[in-house]
Image (cartoon, rainbow, N blue to C red):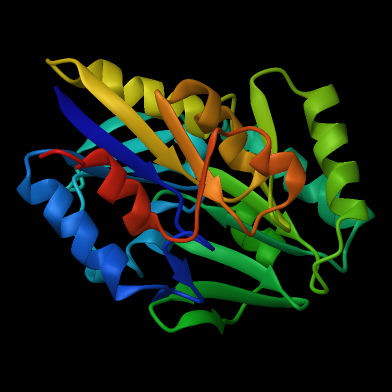
Length: 259
């Protein structure tokens, strides 16, 4: 039976957009050479993910915490977006109450940010300051929004958790997920539903494996046939999996044992 590995990105395969281990890169290549599949499963949007994909071979991208799936050719296999007016309402209200936080949104083509109280857009070199007002750019956007993100410049969580609670109480069909220090806001999807959706698209049975290091990976742990996390993570995350490793390549070694 074919196997597929769903892997988180940040803190799992890369730190600061750089690969953690060349052994991970080699193992992913070997996994695919053996006829199995590799998919990223991330809270990042496609623009953010494309910054690191040149370092790795892959078959699929599960993006926006499960709200979008694309293949190698960037063909969209699945996509759910936040309605334009709801995304605007969430950001306008959050920024009015917490103007000192950082915010981003992705409109399907470009990621815009309000970073350290400056209006920015994402480039291959990171966020670059641009002319204009962040909320004006948002409010002039007519397209639906793929993902909204909020985070504290000093990586504190109190305000982030308040926004999370407010969103999850107020909106039906919107999901606010804590991703380390980031709050990812999408339609009612998770990495776990993204995993299930991609597996359902195969015309053959596949055995799913996953690995991640954060709270937005917990649903993925529940949905995969075999879930892994790291020895270094918090107890609350570690206790949700039977298997712990130090590197992603160890998961692939286990997947390929006997082949």
